[in-house]
Image (cartoon, rainbow, N blue to C red):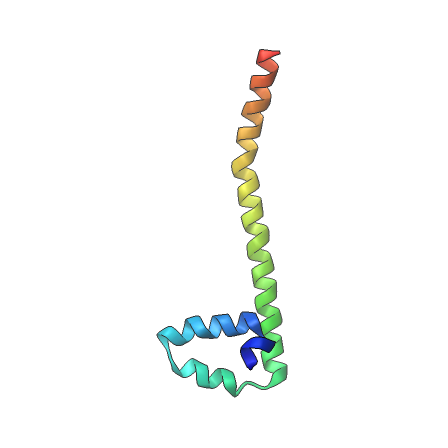
Length: 76
């Protein structure tokens, strides 16, 4: 039930429970306020991760775009 209400937190708990099974029982005893706080914190972390990945992808594509631009200028 808590996994449905707090999906990101639930995923993290499942991953941690593979290493330390006691984490699952702690998760079920979390009060709603603490669980919501942790869920929101995970959302911010995930958002930051997505932004960083997008920047990294842009940096990888940027040099290719510059090379393509120079080739177009050369050929025209």
